[in-house]
Length: 425
Image (cartoon, rainbow, N blue to C red):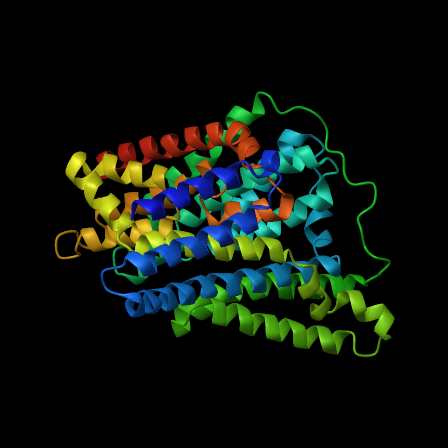
């Protein structure tokens, strides 16, 4: 057990120091996952067969997220290839960096409530490449997008995976969670934006030339693929709520439909003219290194869930701290370091519905803290991991530049929720 924890900590440090040590984080994540599961199979009292069953179960959970990520990234990529994001960029007229930041943050916040935080981050970070020339500026914008997307995802049942878990588990209901967390989530975004307003100066400098690979698309094609691409992403939570099937089935179905429409749209063009526009080409352009990192880090964290270390952590917090509000706040902070999914799952097991019925304070507060606490570190949320791959965000840079304002927003939202709860109950 101790060995597994040591491997994870060492891997975590190497991921954080990726740039100084010049070793790709994907390699570290895969090595950590392989070693942690190997050690667990050797020391598990239940034997190797039981560990294999656990690994199969965790692999299914990981694959569901990875399939969704690949589908969402491909949809965004093919929309971008058609110039679809010009539908948005042509309407954003901000000339000052701070004005643009506020616009982008609010788009991310409300888009995340409809889609989910990871998909929203992929869309918005891709969009920033169309709006800003300087990579340093895009990095900062990506950090704020992560905060906004996580905050936006926390206040609706379909916006964040942990909120969805609580929703499916019966711990929260749709209208109650939206009314309870909208204001705290808004505060979570507003505080970083207000703080940033004091030091972010300068004008928006767009890219000199947006890479188009020589492909020219008509306005009809741009509009069609943009609205179909965004419609595909919006379709997924609707599909899930109607069919109760996993989101990756919805994203694969949407991807297939988009592929089919694309084939029809370009069927009369020459192979050379349509090559860059096909989904087959888009699949080759997505960042597979980020996908592999996602697989490694999720499987590594899953080891600690399988061997009981994360549930044990939750129980230890209950024994040592006692106060539920503080426990939930700490769980939110811990979710910046490890995946919030097993933490919330463990918490759901600790507090039975018979004792804490639907829409109890603990569940709403858990949804906020677990959903937004991951913004504090770049690998603390799916949104952060996605942005990390898309814009090559340095872990230490994020910890220095974004973590402080994310932490302010996190605690600001906590104060807003507790004050709001005391006034209404």
